[in-house]
Image (cartoon, rainbow, N blue to C red):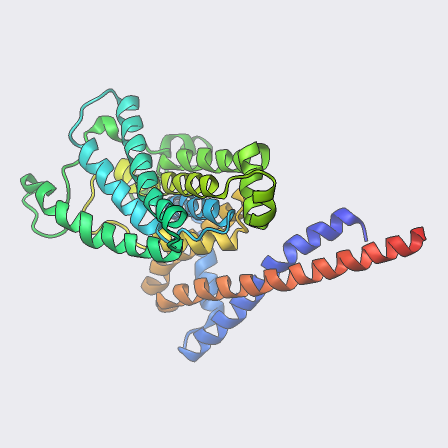
Length: 370
């Protein structure tokens, strides 16, 4: 077989296996719950092609993609930054509070909010890095504890003092709204040049541009820079990297700082584009989903993008399934879990086959040369 076709086939084998397995398991669950798998999947696909649902999918996928990139930076060095959740919560909270108190020209105001979010996220992730490098504390333990400290400690303690009482709303109280100069415009006008008018009050978040910049920058950093090489080398073989002159402590700190800085941008869809404040209903779980998306996407920008779009589509379909009565919203959670499980197993199977195939081909080439 042509080597290029072989590589493409192996690259597509794992996602294809995961997809087939996820559909099969989801179908069984649907049958058990007295739902029709064909009707359910048809409803998802029919609605998923509507422009408004595509906008919903992109809006949901944007923070998930950023979360996946944040997690992938740590994974590249075998660091498990479980604290992405707490980092983006604390960063969004700080950005919302400070951003509401300043008045600057539009680009400067938006830039200030982004810088605050990245600095706070990086600083909070840096705590776990310092604990690991200088005290030998496992980053998983440190980041999990820092998650609780950020959400249940720091934010819970400060939030009551920054609630905007002028709104008169007792429920879902939040911080003061960021002035309009700190809002990122939606992209509806641009999209409607090529399509029809976007209805049902949907707005395509402008934060998607930030996500694209993050994805491109990550790809260039990992594949085209010396630091990216050092990062990958430290992750693949820490001992060899140390012998080669790559300082492990410095790499851990820089990787965690970068991961935290990107994590700080996850909540910007809410802060800069949707609610323009931090409230009690602030979106949760994006950091944890980002871990799965980074693994599903094999820690590459294109892979993470497709994984984020898939999860965004499933999330957008959740409400549709409930309204149509095709299936319970819980089927989406089952599908996500099944896809992740199937992908991990499929990737391992394909990787093992690839290694054996390479050994076999090398042995044949050596024997032929002899």
